[in-house]
Length: 222
Image (tube, rainbow, N blue to C red; front, side, top):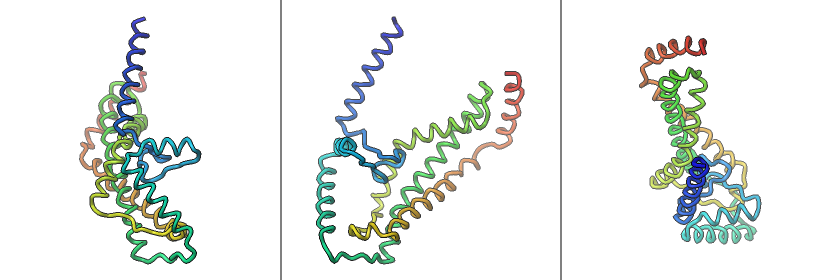
């Protein structure tokens, strides 16, 4: 009975916290790529998704969205829209999409390596779990951290004044623009993940090797 009461109290407390967070707009719609925030990808496949997305916006964000939709509709109605995208616009678009993903890649790898190393040398030694299992736990912690870090990275990049150029509806549909956006994100992730490997230089490699050697008889006896 005590266990049931404890679970009920915990559930009620969680519901109260969830309602408070929704009222404070602290929960934001994250789309299909939850780690990278709603700025990157939002899938509105039905009316429920659209309503849920609008509920997560502040009044100022709704106003900006309405203005953008109105402008987009007006541009689509025009016959002679500029389709040609300049090299300067493509460079600006590449940088604007590359920088946030560099930050995401750095944070993701740093958290995963540090968490995985401590799990491997700490809890892993006591429980006798493998290095791959410790890496999986580190990846889990990294994914959880990415949920909250994503918005701060986007905010930091926006404060640098590096924004994507304003393109027309037809320009956004061109292959050059789509390729530039995707290549910017891919390059950003690759560069960020490589930079995020620097914690490997800080750990004591001989100590880590000795720890793994100590774990072998433990796992064999288990």
